[in-house]
Amino acid sequence: MKKSPYQAEIFAAINIGIAMVLLINPRLSTVYSILILIYGTYRIFKNKNADGAAHIIAAYVVGIEVLFRMNSGGFGYEYGKYATILFLTMGILVGSKKRKLPISFIIFILLMLPSIFYVDYPTFDLSRQMVSFNISGPITLGISAIYFYRRRLPITQLRRTFLAMLYPIIAMSIFVYFRSGSLEDVDFTTESNFQASGGFGPNQVSTVFGLGILIIAACYFMNIRLFRIKNLNIILLLAFLIRGLATFSRGGMLAPIVAIIICVVVMSLTDAAFQDKLNRVVYIFMALFVVSVIGFYYVNDVSGGLLEMRFKGESMYNKDKSNLFSGRMEIFDEDIEIFKENVLTGVGPGMASEKRGEISGIFSAAHIEYSRLLAEHGIFGIIAILIMVLFPVSTFFKMKSSDEKVLLILCCVFVFITLGHAAMRIAAPGFIYGLGFISIIRKMK
Image 1 (cartoon, one colour):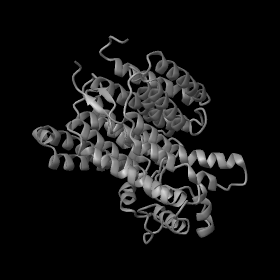
Image 2 (cartoon, rainbow, N blue to C red; image 1 turned 45 degrees about the horizontal axis):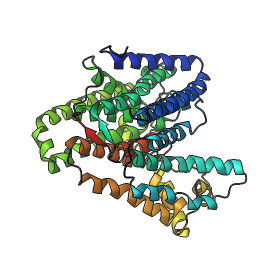
Image 3 (cartoon, rainbow, N blue to C red; image 1 turned 90 degrees about the vertical axis):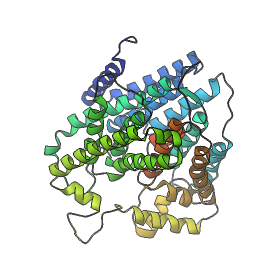
């Protein structure tokens, strides 16, 4: 199989087969998640991560996390984030080459710890769950940044990393189709659609499909060929777009599109090497634009025009009621109020939802990571946000490679938008953020 020119297509088919098995017997997802842990640990220690096993297998976990959750499987609900942290940490520890670690992200991780002592839930188990749910995301981001920062990745290894994420996303798109059925059979409203999301959270499903779009776009910009079958990328792009739009969770689809636009604009204005290949980039950009228009028109037509209303923030139930931010601004405002009352330390991981309940009577987990960091970590949250935002900006101006700049912009913009609508509920934002800091090797000596 290693010598087959269609190796990527074969592995994609295998993952589709795995998804179909999980559709029949969801309990097997737990078994499979444990096998991934065992195999990943073995591979990392076998070659001391010389082949990049840590980040390749972590990438696979990032891609399959939501599929596991859709099957109520995986070794615990936070399996994706913990497994990603585990693999990348092992990769750091067993690596043969000593690398300079970014002190900023060691500080970032430490900033998350003090507020734990302010968690005040009735039972230890509930406190543990809330700390795990709210802290594991930022820890994933910090560990990922430490692992990837200036790590030298051959372009072939970067391709394998992209594919490792993409295989289970392809499988999930097929899984969602068989579980949800044809879009013509879906009952659409102007709210997020669980039916079109395979019965699971539309926000997370849409975010993962958006990740698939981002990966394919990044490969086009960086001239990385993922599959041997011609135009398979376009087919996948359209499939992810249609299924992502059908969830009616807008953030997951806007994140990669905005990232692509900002990447083209910034690189065109700042990078001479990128300007030299602008004709090719414009062609790619137009192709992506056409695919996006086709996908949007199709889903809007199937939904009877409700998708357009959804993106305009209109409600089919109340024409005077704005649905633009889906209640997120109310949560944001309450988080800021909590922060003002607890500036120094915050209220502790997960405690903001309790405080919001006292304010408005609605106990809701945060969708906006920035306001959550402020409310639950206080001044430490401010410092964490500054590190997260300013570090990639300073790194960008130190980079000389156009490919590295493109990857950094795409990854960071995607993550920053995702944190504004889906917080860090899955491992993808943290992992993708770190991936943007790699050093790409085009030619091996």
